[in-house]
Image (cartoon, rainbow, N blue to C red; front, side):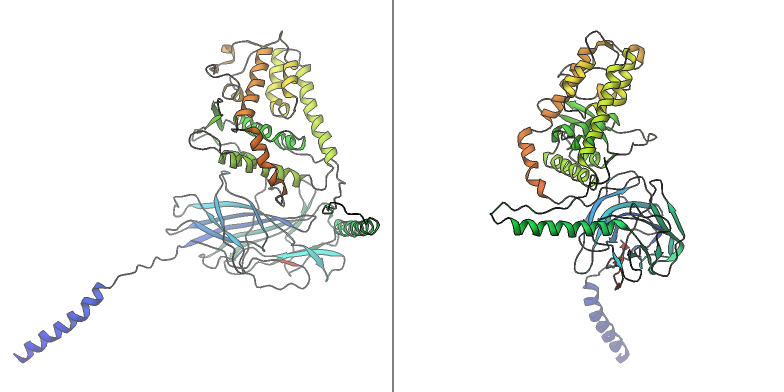
Length: 528
């Protein structure tokens, strides 16, 4: 009996201890995601103002469930992110997460996240004040840099590459030196005749810093300093010789020694040629029509646009930065968001201004006027309807860059010319070229195309262009006025470098450079 009572008492005591534990909330701790870094490629362009453009190319693979958020450090404060994209040119959401002594962004990968699928994303950024004098190599400039480390990744980074493109004017043999004890793996000139220094490592430890650096001799730095000194001297003379009050204007020093800036698109040339903002936006729309990305579904009272789905086996054509921005303005109902359109134009204008730095604006204007004039010459001199059709098809974007397009197009297509609109002229059949209720049906073959007098053909396109420009926004004048205050906004430091496959990420600032500037971000990168 005594034993039974003791056993009962022990059971009651254990039960009393267990019940509170059972009622306590249970917190589930989610394990950190696991991932591997397949590649980390970095390409840096050193600019003449001491800033650098960076193109980041990172591929990683999640090996467990994850949110798909990658933190990428930036070399220093004041950076500007120009774009974040995947390999399909789809823009990825990013957030600036800088704080304290950390500078960087979070990149949100496309969902859903698939385990064991490689994800590649590209970041284009500009970072100011990254180059300085190299006191260990007198007469040289230099910079040091290391790509990001990923301490939380598994294994090692499969492949690390760093390419630094030196400024124009630097030649192989111009006292180019490596700075960090890591010799160049290669020194060569690229397709633009610019010198490139290059390093590469395979199976690099995820937490180890891969320090690289370059020192080079460049006359432009001293020319720039000399111009600044000369400008300051001139300014002092003006101050001391003019005592009357005058409206203050911030002094600027500009050296235009490179002639015309070539390589602009027709839309960018339209900005140089000072076309109205809504006209430049209309040209962007025509470019999207040419690429069969959108179609126009209405033009009155406001233009409406529908984005088109492409067949799975048909790759999407690459989009330019202003086309990507324009598509962001497209709302689900087909209308265009005017605030985003305004931002699109401002980004376009600022990028063009940056591309013209160091070039003669007057020479650039004359150069693109000559291109537009050649397009008109080709159209007017075409002797047959077929040749005129070829000229229209090949030059429509450049023809639109003329502020006198309306009258010139009618002159170039006289009434006695018969035009057969071609089935492949997507910009014609699906653009804003016809009044409501008169939308044409494109022929399936060239032989089914119905002839149209050249003057009617010209009138349709001219009226369509006018409708698109006038009806893209509710009030053209108000829209234009909205752009005026924004002209004081600081322009983006550099336009996106395109056509390259090298990119970078940086992190973990633990450096002190006595000789040249350091390109080291102040936190480790990582993924979750």
